[in-house]
Length: 108
Picture 1 (cartoon, helix red, strand yellow):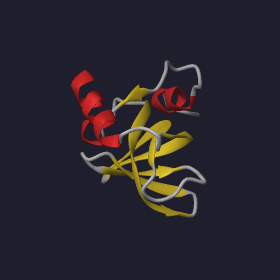
Picture 2 (cartoon, helix red, strand yellow; picture 1 turned 90 degrees about the horizontal axis):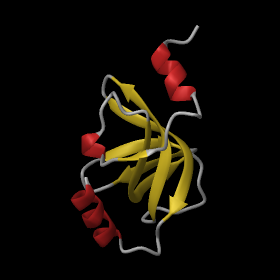
Picture 3 (spheres, helix red, strand yellow; picture 1 turned 135 degrees about the vertical axis):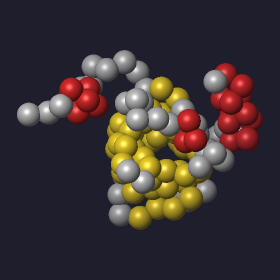
Picture 4 (cartoon, one colour; picture 1 turned 90 degrees about the vertical axis):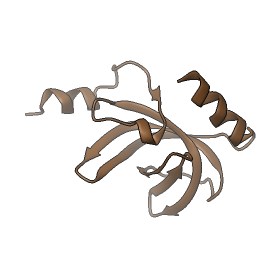
């Protein structure tokens, strides 16, 4: 039987993804959206850097290293940090990454 936290994390009816910086992630976060640059990619995992930190994301994508993206998924807390079980990846390569992240920081 699932605990209530596991059930919440797996429930697709939980409200929308919350856009976060990696440094501001907490165990209370469930569905997150993280914007950053793909710094590494291997076998179904990508590592995203949003200038405040890096995070491993378990998601398949055809995008390349150095592409600016937004990853939507469920946050998985571990003793040594977090990982995102990715649901989808949005290509933001047409945006100015520096301006986008600056605006995001002003809105939070």
